[in-house]
Image (tube, rainbow, N blue to C red; front, side):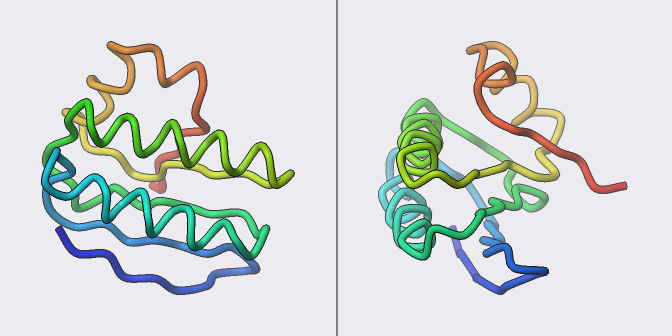
Length: 102
């Protein structure tokens, strides 16, 4: 998995590429927590993520909790159909802000 970061209209955008699994979820979690230290909104772009495991779900949930505690937001953008089905299956579609750019 690779993570690149840029800013877009005051938001920090983390572009994620690859698999988010037990081997890479700590890297994702660290990137989200670090980005949220600025107290700016964070977008985690999943357009290039093919797989999301339970460990990745944990990283997203911890990021959401951190964002809430900082008074900001974290959104997931452009999840694949597979990732969307995983998020929906565990009810994260009701917890996380999920968007799709068209």
